[in-house]
Image (tube, rainbow, N blue to C red; front, side, top):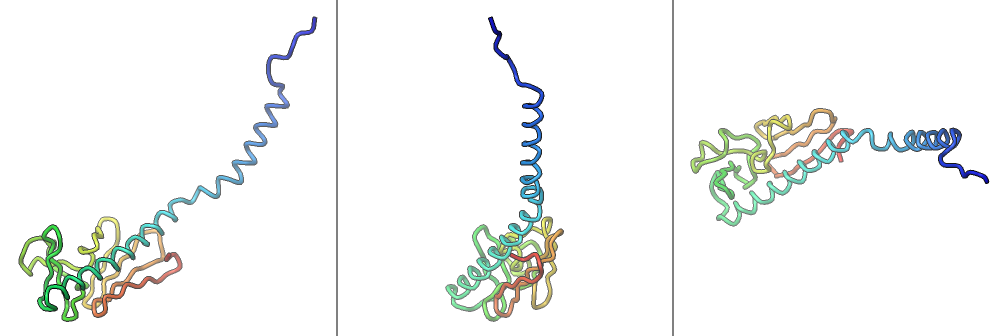
Length: 154
């Protein structure tokens, strides 16, 4: 009587390993650089958040009678506004509380944390950058415009 084979030969095992190696060589580069994609998605979120916050602050200012130098948002967050009703590019304090001395800027209204991004407020603009990208997002207080510049910008 003949006995049946009960396993794989060495050649079959080597061929499976070679095929898996070839597949890994093509698939790995596609998924290896997920960090850059995550940073690009993060900065894209900043752009959307700043645009939305600018529109919300301006709409709230218009709805409140188009006057005043601060706007109190949900949660008691106070945001400084300019004469056109757009969020200021710089503010003092944490933005919480009811008095204008604690008013915050567009970064606070947009919920952007200084721990995650480099935030540079100025008299007319606020710039946000993220380590690892050559993309900066700039908010212009005079018009409420949000623009991005750099090679890595979405």
